[in-house]
Amino acid sequence: MKIGLIADTHGLLRPEVLAALQGVDHLIHAGDIGGPQILAELERIAPLSVVRGNNDGDAWADGIAERQTLRFGAVSLYVLHDIKQLAIDPKAEGIDVVIAGHSHKPLHEERDGVLYLNPGSAGPRRFKLPISVGLLHIEDDVARFELITLEV
Image (tube, rainbow, N blue to C red; front, side, top):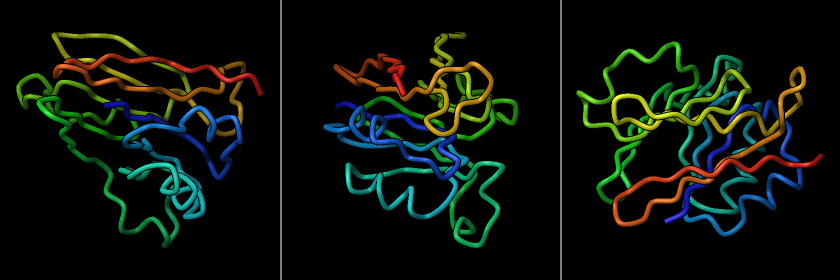
């Protein structure tokens, strides 16, 4: 299974981003979406799971949860926008992968057997950080992350 990870679009969905996410089985947006049109475009690619970011305060986002737990096979994912607001112990809760956005800075690290991921920002460039998305490959109940840095 291949899951596309995207965050911090802030209302901008580049053609390069859409191209990089083609062929995924599922999409996860880790917040700061920027508007319902972004969700509509992403839903054309694959089934979509999404959490609300700190900039998603308008009425269109009222029904979007701030956190979400997902399961793909035996792999459990916990999605939130800002990793600093992680209020659970992922390992104790049986979470295999924590996915966040907010910082616009890609992250791929393992702590205490839990994979922590941030696909970076797919929207407007912030400072000199890359424009990026991620792919989470789940094979034989093992999760592997691939960062895709885009030339835009």
